[in-house]
Structure formats: structure tokens, C-alpha cells
Length: 222
Image (cartoon, rainbow, N blue to C red; front, top):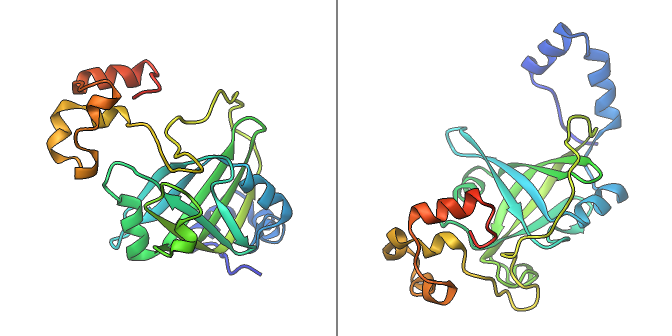
């Protein structure tokens, strides 16, 4: 049974809006601490989720994580694993995980629609047997699940999926195209050495304004 509990402030709001009985029942119905077959099927087809984390001062952030369908692995009913692919180099969320370990994951499907929230204790791992599950990954994250919350689909806009991201690393080789922002002329000098001089192979240098126009137009090369 999960140790998920409401805060005093949440309980006060439940009392104010007459949802105390409802909220108590939901602890028994929609809150659980192990992946169900339905949870596994939902996460198993996901190609994105949102990751919430907090820094040592308690300041939160949320980031988007994406990959090929099934990129989040479930070695057992109380564990999730996902890769850290090449990003902007800030390691904001990953630094938070290394500092405080507390995370929240929101899985969303806009086609069905449906959603699932996961809370847990996370850690970074360089274990080759784990990181090697995702060619192109820099390292991986393991989440020990403390609570899962099944949410209704109300308010989720229904959307049509067009295509996956072209930047997801190849599942066999880990290869991926050079993203547009790494072609911006003003940042060439601060790119990691492994990324310098790659702009020429991706179409040449561009300005910050040109990259911004690509983003606004939905250019997949941005």
C-alpha cells in the first residue's frame, strides 16, 4: 500500500469544497504503489513524458523528455528507467535528481486521451548494462516508484499524432542529426568539443534570428 498522503493544506481545501469523502475514496481507488498491467501498457507505448524535480532549496522545475515509443523501461512493477540523451548541456533536472532525488512524472496521451502521474525517488546511473539499453544515451535515471495516480482525461485536448521527433537517437546506432540551435554562429565557441565544426555538415552556420524563424515556422530542422 502506498504511503501517499495529503498535506494539511490539501485537506483544508478538501474541507472547504466538500471533497473530503471523495478524496479519501480516491486514495483507495486511483492511488497505488505498483505498476498495473494497464499502467505498463500505457507507459510501454509512450514516446514522451514531463519530468518535475526540485533543487536543494525546494525550487521546482519541469522538463520534457522524449524518445522512441517504449523508451521508458520497467524492469519490475516498482521501477522505471529512462535515458538522458544529448540536450542543451544545462543538466538542470538531472542536477536536481542528483541533489534531492524527488521526482514526479506525467505521462500524457493526447490521441486517446489519457494520463498517468508517477512519483518516486530517482538516481542517476552509469551502469553500462542499463545505459546500454539506449544507444546514444549519456547516462540513465532509475526511479523507485512511491506512488502512481490514475487521472481522468477531462480537460485533455484531443490531438492527432503526426510523426515522432527526427532527433530521437537511432535505436541501433545512437546516431542523430545535428539540431538547428547547434548551428547558431554566436554559440560555436562554447559548444562541447565533440559538437564543434559539425554545423558545416548540417547546412552551415545560421544566426539566432534565423533559428528563431525556423522554430516559429515549425521547421523540423530547428
